[in-house]
Amino acid sequence: MDHNVRVLFVCLGNICRSPMAEAVMRKLVAEKGLEERIAVDSAGTGDWHIGREPHEGTRGVLDAHGITYVGMKARQVIPQDAADFHYIVCMDRKNLKDAHEMMESALGQQAAGKLFTFMELIPGRGVPDVPDPYYEGNFDYVYELVDEGCHALLDKIKADMGWS
Image (cartoon, rainbow, N blue to C red):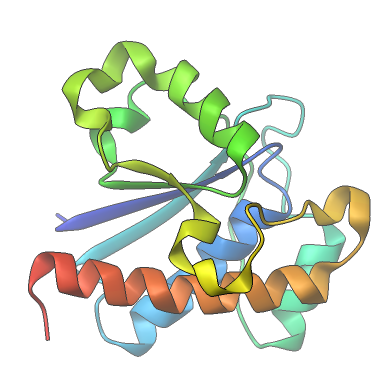
């Protein structure tokens, strides 16, 4: 299946924020009938959770909203992601910096506009980063941000691609 658009969400360990965003975005894409056009994935800048399912807090919030995460396993960002994804959405500024460094060799001139922070999608919220619920325990608040931001991202993709 060849997708027109590939989206990658990036956080630190790929067990809380980025898999939450992946699951929410997949649901939105499916609701709009765009599964053939948009592929969604997530990854972490750290390597200590590779192969693990999403954090229990993330799973709980997704379950409460009827959003599936079946088959999702943590993986680490790799340089090839720079070429494979059109939108690389980092959950905070530190992960933006780290992801850029991890993909720098493969990014070349493609970097402009491809990597950005999640909160750039919803600037009206007035916070620069999606807080890490692994440390904060605020999974419901993170879900609110993720849901709002994923709607904004889908609107951005549709506008960028000229889809109605």
